[in-house]
Figure (tube, rainbow, N blue to C red):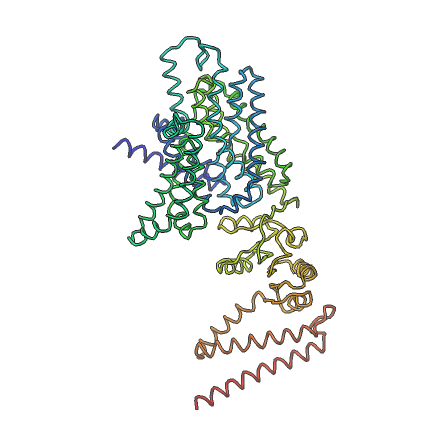
Length: 637
């Protein structure tokens, strides 16, 4: 017990110290966790062999992460991603495998070993990439969604790859062991098993055979389909009654227990039928995405996901074999960089083919250029099945770990490139993949309130803004927004201007706002346009451009402040509210009337007709207030 508490203290202390420092330096939490693992492992040797066992437990953070991501995707959204899944994801795996296999063969490896290396290194790190995308608010960008599609495809591809790898064992010469020797030495066999156990999640690969072992192909298919169908049926028909039953206990911790039970049981079922636990959890999340208990599940699992993912990254850092690295550092580091460069070039080209441009293309290429945690699974499985020699496996494990360690630096490089693009005016708009009845152009302080109110009332909005920083902040708070200039006709068309019912214009740039109002009114004479105006003059311009409802940005807040003053001066709440209502109604009518007299080429103070009518309207307001006061006095008498 004392040893466990000591180890727990070491891991927690390393995370608590290293991660905030990395975050303060702008390096991100992932690099902080990896650095913490390196410090307590290879540097100070505070942890030992238990790291590998702990890593298997920490993998569950990846499963939870995919479950939570699934909760954010309804089945319709997943179906809309099918072209990205098959096109982007499938092409990336095939091309990366072919290129890396060719490089391995060029260095003298047999074709079977080379193919296994290519398949292993073609996969990227779901854990690191998705965590970083979430932290930086990039999941909702076109590049972020493309990255997610490829990662999901890779997770699915692990299943057929595990089934295919044993077929490559025939490529080793007869009698040759995985380490290249000829005789069957028991010590070498034991070493192979140890390498297998050291692999990332190898137990999952063996446990997955429990229900399908010995079955014919059609039997395996039926069992697999049955497992997936059971998840869907339970998610659709049984989760609501179970949640209501738990709710009757009035114990908050029971919600957490149920959330953990859902994820754990689904993961176990997937392993039993030979599927990826992460894939099963993702499927369950998609099924429950439309459930009214979705937010409960997210709230209960988020802390566990964060801690387990952090623990996973620490174990990756602690497991780096620095002895092997220092034995030939230039070669091994060069191999890791070569993997990143080759995959990055391929991804950059695929992104261009699929019309990713600018920042999205760089995010797609740099975000997926590393090897991933599933590579540990494939390496250990390749050793166990006699496909890959031990020496190659150890080097490959180190290359995978190093490439994962370099990943946060790639995201820092992306930030630098993105900033330079922004400064150079080369920002590429997001791909707008949804439409809604309400389009909000501009999401500053004013637009955010409008968006939150409309969404909270159950209506879908499409938010557009040309400021990347503003969009990033919105995404961090969970609001979907698209980067793009709302005044561009092509952006408006993609946002669904032809079918929208309401256009809300809250742009800071008054000239751009007028341009947008005029274009929208010309394109859609029937659309209702709600706008934000800076002052009365801006109101008149927008009114002439075709706006329906115009809100002066300081008007309503000023009225509320005036009402508070009246209350403090002795008026009752009702009297103050009535005075506010009268002033509001009179001012709206005055603005409508004065708009017809306003001339854009003459200053209001020089417009005689405008000034005279403004004076008359002010006298009418004063008269109306005097009449109201006299009426109140008569009632009291």
